[in-house]
Image 1: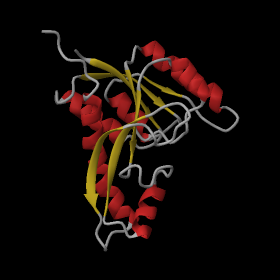
Image 2: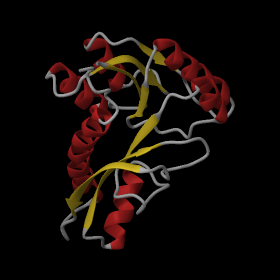
Image 3: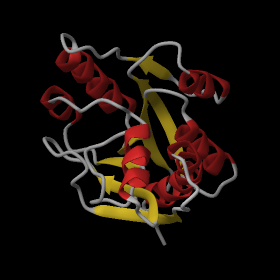
Image 4: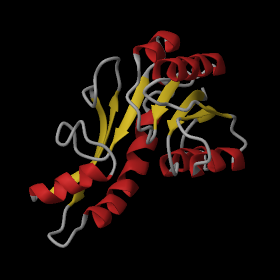
Length: 196
């Protein structure tokens, strides 16, 4: 049974593209019913348009966070999504989002082996990993909940070795590839089994 999902993004959308590709290649029995974005004019929106996926922009500022995210939650609920995927969405979700969304489960991708380096995002994660002299990093997909940041139960992790020669940028590239695989696998965990 095909799983309807909504994908929340903020930038380039490479994790969104990984989901689009997995669906097109029939490796994932899902359908993206909405791409919700926190910024206008980003590559993720171009990716959605090329794939024929409806999208909406819900710009977030400190002054508009609750209002914008409530609208985003309502749009997701209205799309019929049965799962929300935070795929590079770089804003903390306000209570208004959770109120509007209701009981739809939410998952998030994080570019480290949580709980290590939780609470950081983007390149800050990779800078911290390299600065700490860690020998491995990776990607984690976890459940997301109201009022919690990078604390939900872990669904999938992919490990990536850290070389002494790594820079934050070279590590980020390898972790991103791991993110793509981990996210597709994690979404697959929510696909309902076909009725026998």
